Length: 472
Image (cartoon, rainbow, N blue to C red; front, top):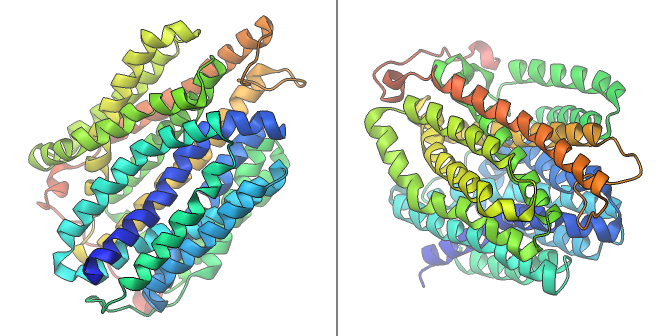
């Protein structure tokens, strides 16, 4: 293999680690909850701690790669992710596991942001085919992840979903080192927006804590921190979140829609996976039920992307979230295991179709909304916004489920829950929680109507003045 191909293999394997870990952990959460006695809030934190640090440091990770070298930043992310995985696998209690997941998010932020950047730097103008291969192989890994994870949880131990990362991370580092070669795109040196990253992490962390733990006084900490974050981003020369890009109509609208529809997506996805195990499906079966979502993306996403290029994204960014909302409504009819083979399958099919019709058009619209030289920043902003949407929705929906369930001495949607009253209350709480996801999806569909097809095709541009004197 050439050095470029070795680098390609390293970025595929490294990115797959981060992508798979999210879905695998969701499948494992009910089993972990039973063993470590975490409750619903603990399950939420297993997911949210990773998403929180990932979202807070996503853009910072890319900036570090630009400043110190993408390969070095990528390798550092892999090492941090592996060490945190070892800590998670050995965690004797929920607190240490949640802390390890937060550390995984830090590693994941540097790993994922510098993966594609490293490919672009290594292949230069010839990066298109390499990125296509990266997309294909990481998509296949995403399908395999829930199945492998479900099998490990069911027949070995949930701890091995973390331990498995160690040899794969070692192989990633070997491939990245052996693939070391001259980067065709030079490293750009710039300032790091560390105050922005710290304020974002503190603001969104305290907001999430207030919602999950229902400690509403913490909102008094979250609000000023988020306000200071906005002020800092307006004043700093090289902000983590360049707010001036939001003066462009499509960029502002599509990122607002991204927040809503990814909130709906993860709000459904996380609690769907917990709910089917509450109904009596095994971890492996739960992983199998997640396959159609990824399969639809592989088979149909590129086609919907091409149709969006041809006809404009407005139709797809309106219809796709509406389909996801409708699918979630259909899934509310699933009350027993047997209902999954009727209403459940219909809901999964509808949701998968909506997801496939959404992803390529919404990402392409975000990138096309800014000049080509700003595409990297636009991609980072769009990815960060999607993570924040998932972070807030999983916290809010979990809070709704816990409040509606109402039993302080029991866990809603607990695996193996047998008491008829508790089961009935769990189903009721789940349904009301899912109505939040439905509302988010339909709100996203409404925003889709505001997308300009003309601007998406480059027929109109809204000038965005550069900041004077190096400030926003």
